[in-house]
Length: 369
Ligand code: HEM
Image (cartoon, rainbow, N blue to C red; front, side):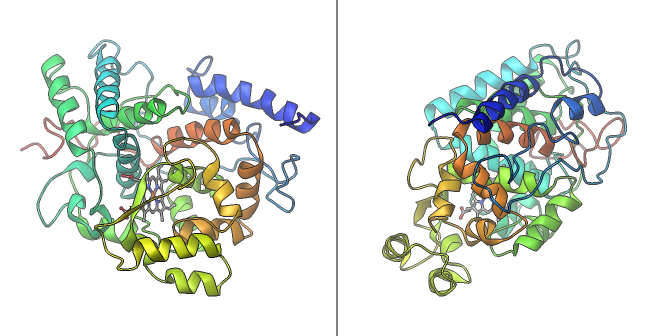
């Protein structure tokens, strides 16, 4: 790609935000971290006016919505004395799991998002009470990766008993899963505590499943301390992984999308052939063009009417989100990937239990008794 002055300045910003994403020079308090990340300053935010053809897109300076601040805060060095090998143990286990089954990278990232969606990252999605806990919600039907997290917990219990929360393990595992597929590594603060409650009914009420309007998704993100930009950036996780035909054909369905003029004809024909019978046995790649690459192809697909889920495709048409989609589609992949790291870190830092709240579970699948 020819480097226009706008591209050059964007790449410079990327270099700066890359440093922030890696945590270098970003070890201060959360306000400092927020400034370094460009939150509030808009330094690393995509903007419709930044020369990337997002014409009419949002003029961005990152606005941090209200959220439940951590009581005792989080700390980069939280386990440096109590469990110094925590990150090494998690990282090794995740790399091994993803090395053996690449699809687990997507599944672990999704597990992290579903945990966040119900009361922040507190490990509640990991609790296993058949028929009752989040794991048994309709929204959780195709979640995977529970075993990876539980086996890391077992290893950590052996290394440092009753110290590392399942919520922190999940946050670190999602970061390491993302890193395993090429997302820049970001340093994490720890000190999340595990929740004691987990409800399938709550998961089905809160976890977005693809039938929502963009207004509902924006509302959901904002009520959880994230903004419109985070919504578009994090939806880019759908550049890897897969969805069941049931998710693809749910209302408005392929006919509805074609009528609305938001479905590429050829892609629609492909989906009709593949998912004719619908259901959960058949899977389709969320990004059919580069299904295993963590890149901006997801946004490029949306520009051609080739978004797999209705909620994905609607991001382009909606005036709140469309400018971001265009920006990410037209900028080098690297731009999106760096933003993704930033938003993932934020996902794990809002609405948390800390200090004396909750507990540190002994097993991730069960609350302590
Ligand atoms: C914004 C609203 C979102 C909606 C409506 C949504 C919806 C969905 C749906 C319906 C599936 C397919 C499930 C199935 O049929 O098996 C899926 C898969 C996936 N989602 Fe999302 N999602 C959203 C946001 C996110 C976020 C924020 C992340 C991660 C940060 C994420 C990561 C993934 C991944 C990686 C997969 C593939 C999982 C796999 O291959 O195992 N999603 N999502």
